Length: 275
Picture 1 (cartoon, helix red, strand yellow):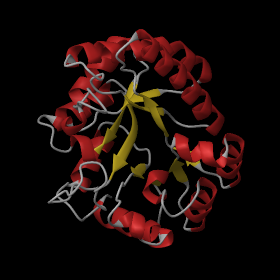
Picture 2 (cartoon, rainbow, N blue to C red):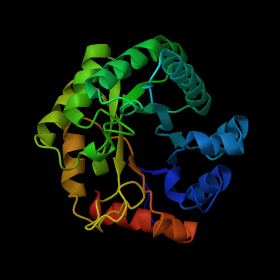
Picture 3 (cartoon, helix red, strand yellow):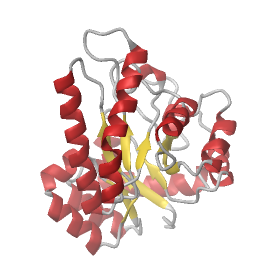
Picture 4 (cartoon, rainbow, N blue to C red):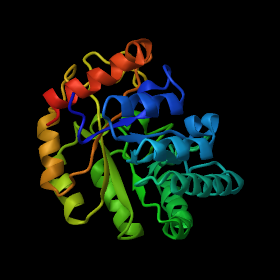
C-alpha cells in the first residue's frame, strides 16, 4: 500500500489506540507522518510521545490544538494565553511543523462576535514571540460557521488570511476541507494563501449527506460530496506540497472499527480520491 504523502491526525484512531500504539501502527503500514492531540500526549507522556515519534521516523505535520483565546473576563483570557504557551512548548518538543489554532467562540454570556474576534487577535499576538522563540509556526484553522458560537469565530479562509495578515507575515493557516469546502471564492483564497506563503497544513476527510452530528460524523474520503482531487489541485497550485492529513471524528462509524482497518482504508481512499 502506497502511503507516501499521507499523514494521520491521531484523532482518527483515538478510540482504538493510545498514542504510542497509533504511531507504531502507522509506521507498520508505511505511513510516515502524524498529528497528535494534546490530550493524547498528556496521557502517553510528552517524553514518551517524542521518543516513539522519533524512533519511528515520523514527521509531525501539526499539533492539535492551541487557541481557545476567548473568555468572559481578563483572568480567563490570561489563562488561555498561558495554556497556549505550554502548547507551543509541547509542539516544539515533538518537532511539530505547526501548532494548529482553533481560536475560540463567543464567550459565555456574550453576544459580541466581533469582540470575540478582537480577543483572538490579541491572544495570538500575545503568544507570537513565544512561538517564534520556540520555532513553532502558528496556523489558524478556520472552522465551519456551525462552530462560530462555541469553537471558532473565524469561519472562512478569507477571514483567517485577513487575521493572519493583520498579525504578522509568519502566521499561517491550516486548511481543512471539512470546514471550507463550501466557501464562495475558495480557489481565489487558496491561491492568495499560497502567494502569502501561509499554508502550513492541509486536512482531509469528507462531508456526508446527511451529516448526523456536526462534530462527530465526518466522512471517510470518497463517502461524501467534497471534490478532494480538485481541492488538492488548488492546494498544490498554491505551492503547498506537504502531506495530506486525514482527520476524522466518527463516533458512530470509524471509531468503532478496528484501527488497522481504518488506517488501511485511509491509505486506499487517499490514493483513489485525493491524488
